[in-house]
Image (cartoon, rainbow, N blue to C red; front, side, top):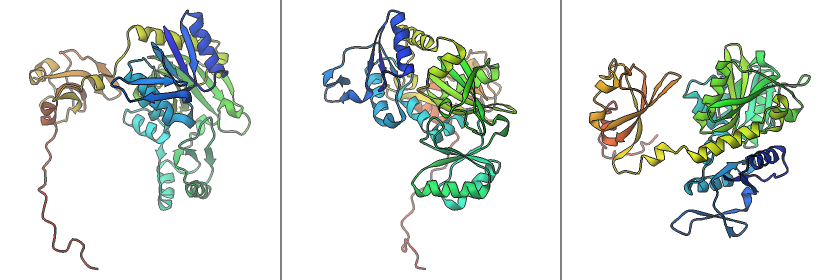
Amino acid sequence: MKLAILSRAPQAYSTQRLRAAALQRGHQVKVLNTLRFAIDLSDAEPDLQYRGRRLSDYDAILPRIGNSITYFGTAVVRQFEQMDVYTPNTANGITNSRDKLRATQILSRHNIGMPATAFVHNRGDVRLAIEKVGGAPVVIKLLEGTQGIGVILAPEVKIAEAIIETLHSTKQNVLIQSFISESRGRDIRALVVGDRVVAAMRRVAVGDEFRSNVHRGGRVEPVELTPAYEQAAVRSAQIMGLRVAGVDMLEGKDGPLVMEVNSSPGLEGIEKATELDVAGAIIDFIDNQVAFPEIDVRQRLTVSTGYGVAEIVVHSNADLVGRALRDSMLSERDLTVLTLHRGTSVIPNPKGTTVMEAGDRLLCFGRLEEMRSMMPTRRRRRVRKLPKEPIPEG
């Protein structure tokens, strides 16, 4: 395999370990500075230049895109995707995970346990938002913060309001989250590769510090995850579109609470804590995927006119409730069910004997008109004539 590691820090521990693991397995590997790429859109075929020269062919890339270059870095990754070069983390997945609000919105749709969160812009909405997440103390997070920077614990409502008002005055966007007292000063980092957790550690803050990040002086220890924590980590990474990710979770009284999904997780802390070859696991996964790569199904299946991918919700009053897929007449309508989502469960390629229930979500490929006809009808209002007085006086 010929692999390119996209990194601006060739001497960093993570970059060196990934390079060493690839070389030990007999692969060709180069560390390429992400900012030295030029995207060439002048020809019919997508192309990239590196340091002013046309880039040679690669089987795969491993993006290590820093927060400060997210926009350009993801553009480079996207160009590699257009060139059919495999990447475990897509440009869309990196972008989704980098924005804390966007990531929270995406995960909230899939029944992932998370601390109660609110996002407001108007000063008058702050107090209500604090009440919505359970009241003080609350955690205030900058959307662009990393490594524990921009995370503040406000013990009282008035203090929280003052902090948020100050941050808003400097054009900073912040999240307001409930403070999980039972997990104060500690969290879990699970390193997800593909569809499994390859290593996990608990990070514990030092002294009165409530942030457990290693960069803030926290200590680390290996931890064996329960199935609930492992499932939460893997599902979160997959939902975000990441095949290599660090998933940070709080230990809530009712189970795991996902805080963040990191698309470029550091390897030093977790390798030293667990004494596991995490870098090697990442390289092995990429090698296997190059031999038999996953593809973007939605993108590949929407190129035929009139056909596409859409999700059909089985409503309680629908004729589909209680029927097996083979008796649903979906195939006769030129529709193929790719995946059935039921609560937190996912049934890929469901069998014809699968009986549908109210609330099921069917990811289907087929004729778009047929799928639209199965949606609840909405009355289309006629466009009225403009009133004689469009804006009444007074």
